[in-house]
Image (cartoon, rainbow, N blue to C red; front, side, top):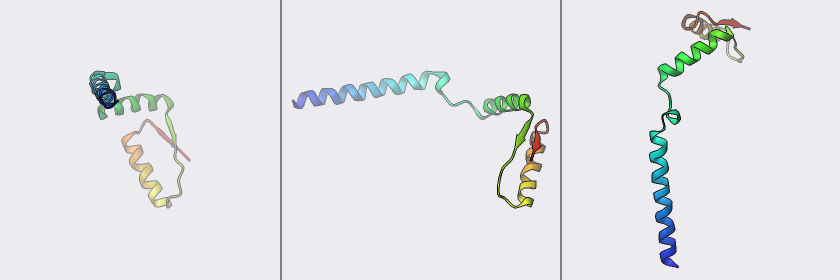
Length: 80
C-alpha cells in the first residue's frame, strides 16, 4: 500500500511539471505586455467614444481625474 501512494505522488508531481511546462510555452495563455493591452484598449475605446464616471468623490477630485483622463485620451468624451 505504501508503494502505491508513492507512485501516485510521483504521477501527480510529474503531471504538474508537464502542465507548468505546457502553460509556460503556450503564447496565448501568457499575459500580454502593457503596450499591447494599451493598444487594444485604445482601439476599442475609439469605437465607443465615451465614458461614464460614477463616484462619490469630492467635485475637485473628480474634475482632476477627468482632466487627466481627457489629456491622455482626448478622443473619449466624458459623460456625467
